[in-house]
Length: 289
Image (tube, rainbow, N blue to C red; front, side, top):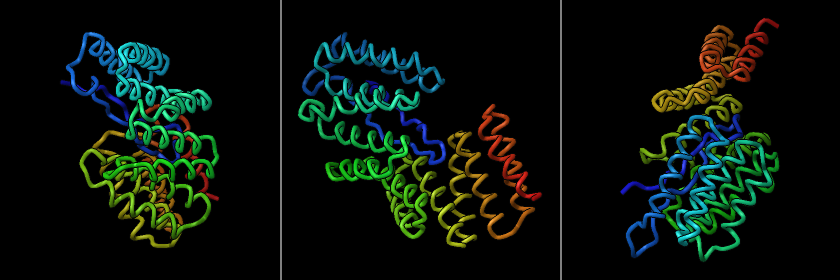
């Protein structure tokens, strides 16, 4: 039996590139097989995920809402919770912070119905939405809440550690960033967590650059690049190349920096990613100043 898909999206915080934690829920309540309503809700959930993957956010939102309505009509709270988490993701991607929080809050207001794992997912989602909103204090508070209530093995812990590493890096706390990202990397050993491992390696690369540990940075960013290529994550490939260029620039190797920036620009251009192209070109222009 297929499980309803709850997609780990790239997240709207593009600079961090997080593969944010979400739950994969079973299709029907414990103790009985799937009803026709369960199957309908699951199919709508999966259609929503396909729309989300293709960038059709409006379609994804409509399909997840339809799946949620059917799941709620038969009290399939596990699948309803999965849909609420996905609805929170779509609103986050649309920059609709209040709506994203509201979807997560519906889960948090009824923990006995949705279960501890889904509640943990909702708390983690709120942490990432607050990060997108620029509220690092609230993001860290919700990250701590998610971890505190997360039974081992705690699936979102690596992503939460990457969130902490990113915030530490943004606040100039290089040693803390290295510690959190190193822990995230150690927690991301399962094959299904490759994207999170790449995030940890990317954050480590940036932190090592700031610590003038240029060889360590190059190794971490190369590791991230290998994973992101394998997963076909274009935006993250471009980030890996940009940060590799920054590492070369920091140690005054302008030829190496130009090599990586040009590759990042080419990747972003091929993906029609104008912000990515601009970021690479700005760095290239800086080489001549």
